Length: 266
Image 1 (cartoon, rainbow, N blue to C red):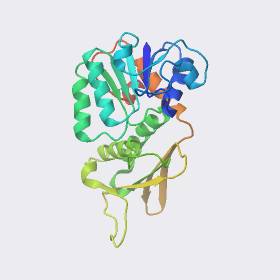
Image 2 (image 1 turned 135 degrees about the vertical axis):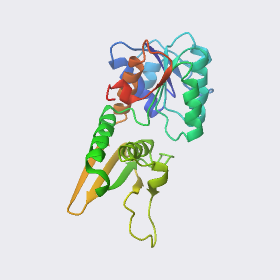
Image 3 (image 1 turned 60 degrees about the vertical axis):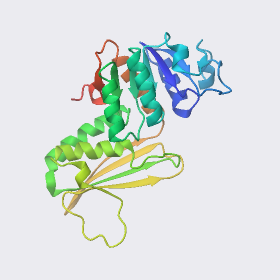
């Protein structure tokens, strides 16, 4: 599979290029930068600091339309939808790691998935997706007797809150407990709020320094507390997962997939 990386000069883009270079069965087909970037025309491997790969950076998907089979996108919701529309039009697969999409934007993405295959997940880490499986199992066993709280921490530059991963964790737990997260979620607490209700799922957010990503889910009741924790120390864990998803898409039919599909966890 020939993989295109958009935002190739960013922190995530560089990690994706390195991950593609390290994985068998995939190769870097294209690297896209912002129009006007001073790095346009530079070798993508040199941009990532791993030496020449023979792939010059270009300014748009149109400039490399014949050079890739699947696009990996960790950008912004608006740009991701533009890129997904392009991939749908030209029968390209896409792996979307962008967070912060609202419900309407997710519906649009699902529409594009009717024309070409899409892997969409709020977190591409293999470990996080295993954690989601563990959370579903824990919630099913523990039931309504345990309070559920989700604490997440990320670097100071993250713009969405709670994180897409934290929200997905909440959705998984709520589904296992037969609840609707939109009805039971509580985001932060302040003032005289009274005692927590039995079925609410609480979210607490930390933004500080260069934290790559940490998530902790508490199941607490009288006498004990169970914590299921995932900590990411490098963006490479997300990059490796995204490249694994790109490789998995080879030969797949149009449709909306997630990392649970990629990892055969369903």
